[in-house]
Length: 216
Image 1 (tube, rainbow, N blue to C red):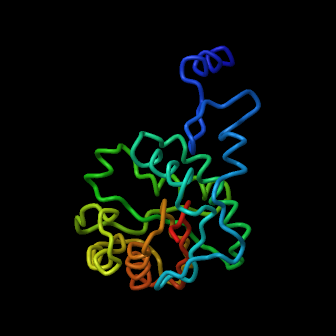
Image 2 (cartoon, rainbow, N blue to C red):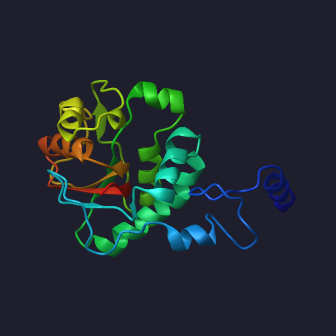
Image 3 (cartoon, rainbow, N blue to C red):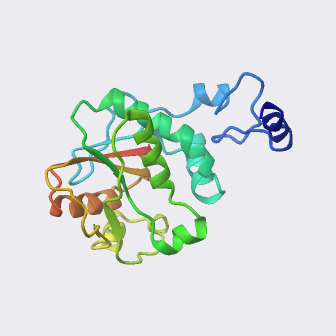
């Protein structure tokens, strides 16, 4: 097994998911430079998102963090969800003191998931659950195709684009539950807010958002 692993590393050397540089000996997961220079958020720098009790992110959405999100979403970077989920789990454990009953995620539209082969928010959520010991389950479905949210610049347009686009899964038992809602990045907060609304309508007691990165 070690021989096979060494051969794979030789053929496909592991790279930093943030800057893309080939990792040097002793570097694991990500490079030492990115560990120091990534745009980390600070304690108490949570983002206010409507209908969410809090929104936590370990990184600002710029520089290497932006590149990392793009690798995760558009360059077949599902393998990077293990490291990104670790950063998110640490952020949740360090900055969220309220009880949590379940972790869930913002689902992709079916066509995007089919094209990509995975849902990056689900991968992140399951990794956070694995590391925190919290249960993870789907709670939402996207019931209307909204197109690409990131192409809309105005916050009002983003909110209108996702209005009514999500609903609780039939049979999801959410009454009284305290949820953590996972996504890769928060910009305007419109998508997280719409998802939180659907979860609350289904009976959720509270909804906290957790993303890898957030825009200023």
